Length: 241
Image 1 (cartoon, helix red, strand yellow):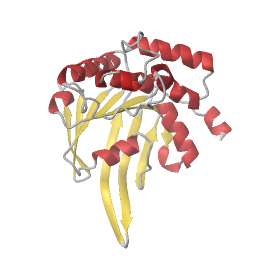
Image 2 (cartoon, helix red, strand yellow):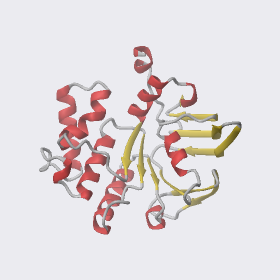
Image 3 (cartoon, rainbow, N blue to C red):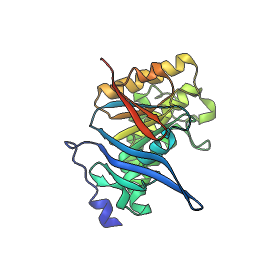
């Protein structure tokens, strides 16, 4: 496993994410239920992509596959040049920690930890020194405008501030992609706008963003919109910028 971690390198000149003829199915007794099928998708470094679709269209399943929370049943998925489908659980966890920064609708902060400690969590699992992780956490807290709240716990912050912490945490390991699942879903309109402006800024700085949303207004901020229906990509819309 140490050998795999040491060999975990990425060619940033290659596409960040490539899915070829990918499908995902679940076995229900003797019946195979395919929830994703014929997924062909390439996302290059620095792209801003929105994924949309009605309930039951396969968005959550695709989200889990992109984020290496699950494996495809068939087809190919390359993330940072590594074939996800061939990795064991420990290797998949390493890829997820190194490649993906998650931003969730419900924030998923640890209530018992303060802001800096929450931001430091991904770096702990990637083997950062205490000094390096603390310095990085302070830098990221300041970047999202919370440099004066670093010793506060999540319960002492507004929803918008908690989502800022979640974004800072997602950036901790300088991931290949930032995967945001309905990032403004639990926020009022003003706080949601602030979060979207942060995502816009990250994109302008060259970050690769994938946002899962039901909100057409949010989707218009992306360069491309991937629309799902019944487990298939039915439309790829390019937004004029």
